[in-house]
Length: 379
Image (cartoon, rainbow, N blue to C red; front, side, top):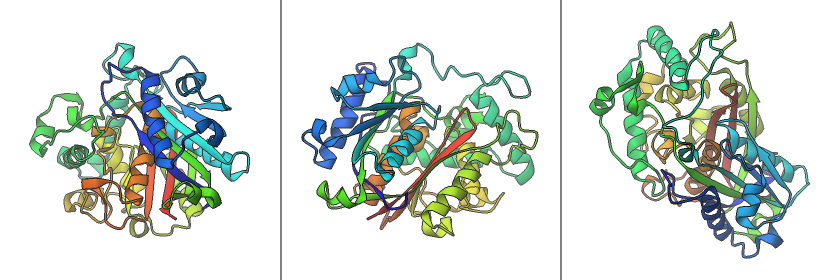
């Protein structure tokens, strides 16, 4: 897989409460931006297949092809929050295997049309007791606090960072700076998570165009190469008797495989920018450690030192992440790829990481027994 597949175009619609748009509208916005980015005038001629992902659509794969009037083989992927990354993985594999030359990846969702305030998800197998996502991850937070001495202030600093980064991303949902005091004083959702510890669920779509690496420069002069991509499973943490609530096993498994594919031995030193799955601030904190960015229990020290801020040693969630850019479930993994491509091509504006040459995206899913990782590099 390494260096066999290139990204030659990316696009993203405005994320938010898009009451005036249908899923088709958002798909068209994101995809036609990707077409323009790749210099594609005739998608019927240049695109061989479509890989799409959505959780809340009840129309199936043809929703994407109907929206785009693109009559090609269409594959729809579903892996809960990791859906976008999984669609990207399938697309990259199809090219690496020689099945297609150029393909389109689209992740999208419009949960705001469902008439509920948040995800209608109940994790009902946590020791056979009902629990929401916030309740489940809160168990990890309480255990981590007790083991390593972290506290709500450490999580608040992550929220402050991601809100700040979101103000610099034109297509993000929440463009509001907050303080540590704001985060600590917000209404409680599930202790220790207050409102600002929880990601914003939004509508949105993102797209990417992939092609064989040897053909990439026929589209643009600065393609981005796929160094690694994997979606790895782990034991269901809701049933796993060996789960210590201090780590996310699927992340550790996926990281090991992705680093093997990309030839990475020291991720903290080699990776320049990362987009992590911050469905909750605690999830981002755990991921610092599970991805090998720091030793176990040391994340709070790096948070305090600003290691993962825009001007830090390894900037994380440069566009605000799920927290403030927004989380339309099926689109998130592709949105992360969109941001990393912009960073690697020097097109991220005020949030640009200097001299970024290797980027990672991390996407938890599978409810939540899977993790997808994509590592991209400059050609």
